[in-house]
Image (cartoon, rainbow, N blue to C red):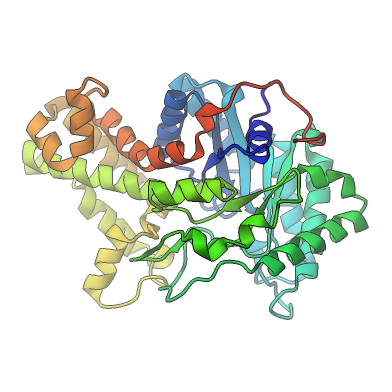
Length: 439
């Protein structure tokens, strides 16, 4: 079995500007699009579930780690994508969901969470204990975060079918999952000394529990390169602001940086991130944002082709579902009623993604795709609403089918990552133990 993560790490540490995209989404259409992109690239696909999406109790998707694994593998089978090119990861694994509980209660649940991911065969685990728990003095020190991460690492090593195949991500400067909750005025990259302190604290904590031998499998450190997005704005990567930070891992033969919240970065920014050693590029809301754009474009085409009584009314259904259950957007979207309406539909933070699995929305999407499959999409309308897909249809690269058009629109958000990471440039390698020398 090919060691895909190891191949990326070895090549990057050898001086090649290569990386890998981490797809952080649980939506089946996004996952199918990711596999189509990876298939076109001849590359592996790294798919990660976030701790609030998927946990031992079901998360907000209703899926446990085994369920999500089976979903991904099932989509791979449908797409004809080789299972041995699918790498599964767990993102922000820690006590995030249980921040209101005291340390022992929250960390016991976090240990069970990590065990569930490891036992299900996930081989990339992000240990994130950066959030304060009930009774904690704040801000948390690197030492507290690292000691808690060591507990989770021990749980994973105990539960994994083959611990030597598991790689870990650490870091205390961890962006909020899913993008910033509020409007951002300024964003500073992690100071190099802070990154070094994080490494030292984790190394000491792992040594203290007898896990020092695992250090070669610490594949990435999460630091802030100065990229983020809020509801209306994207902070683009500026390499001049990370000139010193880029070299923090020069003496770590196995580790690269992992960049969170890279959604909406332009291709040149993503390429610069990989060049500057952020070799893992995580993207999530940007993919469901593209999915929403595709769905809304198809709904606009439907309005032109289908009698009113037969339409899916997708936009109206989405709005009603979000209004009926405002818990996942209301505390994030401030302003007037009109400003909130615009944010619900179009915000970069894409709180709509939490509602896409709702049965009423899924039924509307199914009806939309069925209506357009029956009616056919005339090329002039395709040009009006999905011009990139129109061009590919005209060139014979894409079939004019609503499902294929929708997946290709999601791939538009993945294509810049593919170009930046250049994972397809990697040669096939035989598996090598991650505990060995990655140089």
